[in-house]
Image (tube, rainbow, N blue to C red; front, side, top):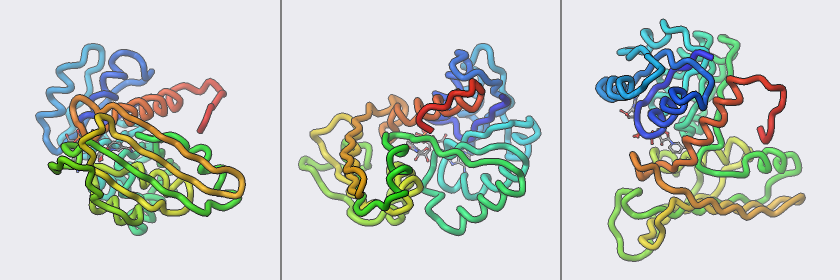
Length: 260
Ligand SMILES: NC(=O)c1ccc[n+]([C@@H]2O[C@H](COP(=O)([O-])OP(=O)(O)OC[C@H]3O[C@@H](n4cnc5c(N)ncnc54)[C@H](O)[C@@H]3O)[C@@H](O)[C@H]2O)c1
């Protein structure tokens, strides 16, 4: 599998290193970041892999990736995503909030159709999307996401727990574009928007997501407590790991697919 990465920050670097170690059986053909230096440093830190440092999307596509991981920003998904999909590469989207913008989503889906390609959304920093996809078949009556993060991860200072936001997921991803992609992944899996609460809590060390679901078939209460990535406290290590796991299954066709 020929793989390219857009965004050489916390998640992009972890994925590149997983390819370099052989955890993802793929060839890393290109890296791209608006800050070119970040790609250069990452490329130089790798051993076995010698990716091209692409200065533009065109250069990245010239490396003929079969799969492109977006680990950059919602803006990158909207501006670069359609051209990637149309050029024949599958797109793995981390900045999932972009997919809650109906116009952007339609453009991406049309491009995927033209390119006979697919958009993959890893489960990211949460768990339970498999059950939500199943429960939407009988109707989801109530879906709530309560996110607690250390104040520094949310860019605030407070001595007490502070509710920063309560409202629909589509509004949450606009107000906190780098922090609440999990709300977008839940929306896409469930087919309904969760009510999102974001709390800055000095008492928590881990990024904590509590997902509450009510449906005629099941009630779910899922609590995920994530260690922040050492490179970016906003980002949970699990987000990188779930992407690595997805890329491993895209790269190997063992015929056995679990939990997808
Ligand atoms: N789905 C999830 O569960 C989940 C979890 C954590 C983070 N994320 C999202 O994944 C993305 C990456 O997270 P991260 O922690 O690696 O972030 P990061 O800030 O560590 O790295 C992002 C990198 O992308 C680059 N970048 C930004 N906009 C770009 C553009 N338009 N074109 C090219 N490069 C661009 C930046 O220069 C930076 O180097 C963010 O949008 C983040 O919100 C998703």
